[in-house]
Image 1 (cartoon, helix red, strand yellow):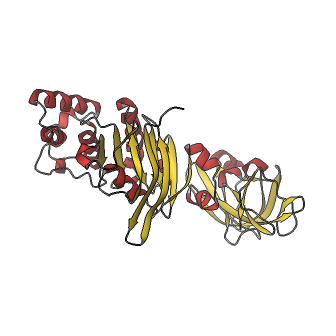
Image 2: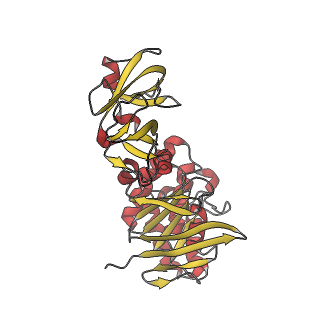
Image 3: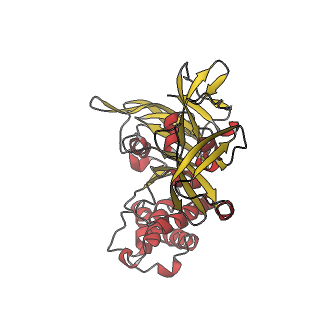
Length: 353
């Protein structure tokens, strides 16, 4: 069996009587981009701070390449943490900010200069080496903070909401930039975020946390396509939840229409249940394994697609269906129109009510 690069074993953290991290065990691979995803209070940031050494463990252990780091001081760990605020020194130039950590390690001046110049080339900011942070854009400051963390050549880089201070367009650009740099440096990245889209775009694997515990770990595709719980299904992307009942032959809508499914979650018993289907898996018409009728209550235009909000007896809130632009050009429903939506059994997930 291959030894995990970073192993989190039965880690717990109490703050007085409050359990912030609840018996978390997790193996992270070398050179992996891993995301800890969850809402506020889920324990993801506390877990990251324990990895960095800024919070002690109430129980369990953390190992890197088989050796425990749980009792090491933060500056002794082969780990670096990049804060959301970037925390750049305003009185220092870009090059001085990047060099600061190396100077604290008392490395030879020639080596510091060589490593700083090399990483400035990688982040494509050599021409701004003499500027101060207040002379940089948000994206440039983010890259300087990343370079300052990477220049020390840690085995693991921890990122706490690294793109939280950027606007939407710049966030999208920097998501791809971070992935590029991670692959170029070959360093294990562990990122904390509450932004589901960010995690799906950037991570090789994602761990969803809730109330201090791990709910599900998997690739972005598995997390999105095969949610392990109703909470995970609702937290990642947009999901429609439809009322169904278990029958002798499977599941059915309240009016008795059979609901075909390929995925039934653990814990689904007799009686009421919930069927879940993604908006992009719904299509106009009664083709497919399942279908229902409803009334269009709203239409949201998103450029590349339309989101139809459809009122139906299967749900207490409008069902959302995504139509691509080419389909909408030929079959654009109107508000108040009665329509039929269909979908496939393979796209249907059943969870406890």
